[in-house]
Image (cartoon, rainbow, N blue to C red; front, side, top):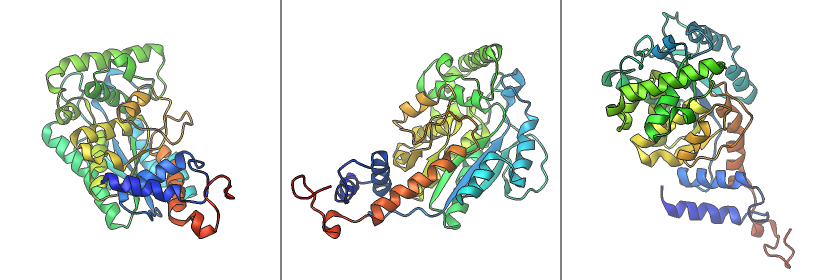
Length: 343
């Protein structure tokens, strides 16, 4: 992405019939989008929320308030249209694709669910690496393939989402591995563990980081050691979407940590990312700050599933329309300087 496009987009926005900066964040979003897409007429019409689902071996350590059977049960809920993300998607006119990359269950064929299972859940990273290098690559490819399907389907933007009991523990461990931050700063309550459960999660992450210490200096090996199948798939999707010059809406804590891993694997992809919201999960703000990401929304949400991505898409669509359709001062016949009839 050329710096010249940033300058051209900024100038185009400044020429619009309004006081400079009066549309606030909407302007900076439009400018980033135009620069990334390399056009002064950005258009976002269709978006697809990609929900990658997998179970985590570390859930055996009692780090979640819910049993891992919930992941398989939620897959059926996604398919039936009763999940929060499917309700939001219907309301907002968005598409949803769910990808089973590692659910620990033999699921039947479900509408809207793509079977891309690498294995039935990751391994317990408190005992051994979560994935082998081959499994990591397969999970990354599952994410890339989902984006290629979206591109083939004419999608302009992809929203990142996930489902998996135990994945806040994996995301916290990966965030600590990638940033050096202690578990106290990265581990949160996830689905709602109590104080005892929170202490247990932090202890598990601390022990896992110590166990895998020699493997954590490289982002790929860190992903394999303490990540998860759906987290790797999210990273693969983020990289592939940027390669195809598709806007990427990054959802909550898990998706943001996956985006950070993707950027550590390929630093050129960062301009593709728009951060949907700041969740209530501890560690999300740290992940956003590390990526120099400013969230579009702050609704105290912590569900995942791509719900934040869905809610933020209309803002991106509106930002694109402003840059594309709003008149300039000269087109509107309005003076653009104070004292000369400007608004």
